[in-house]
Image 1 (spheres, helix red, strand yellow):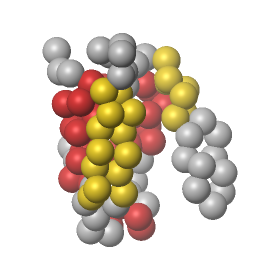
Image 2 (image 1 turned 90 degrees about the vertical axis):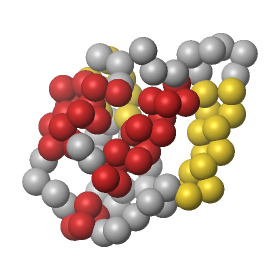
Image 3 (image 1 turned 45 degrees about the horizontal axis):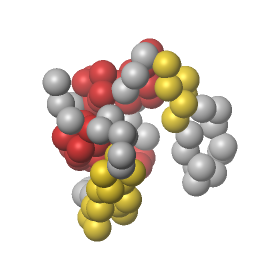
Image 4 (image 1 turned 60 degrees about the vertical axis):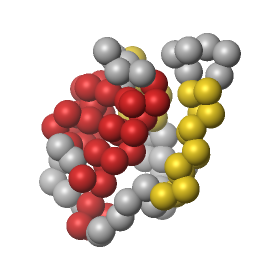
Length: 89
């Protein structure tokens, strides 16, 4: 089992490099993922299945851009299962 830190790093790097088919498995079965800066304001993704569809859909233009996470800061919390992470692409 991966730590929250390891899971976050797999996710933030996987969004850039893939494998996209495995990214949804990094989330809980029930979730709430929003993209607050998306220009079309899509609805939240609320399940692992919705996330899998999101990650494996035909690549949008954004996925053809070369990007990498930078300025990654991970804050530990009193709960060993919870972290707060900051980063930029």
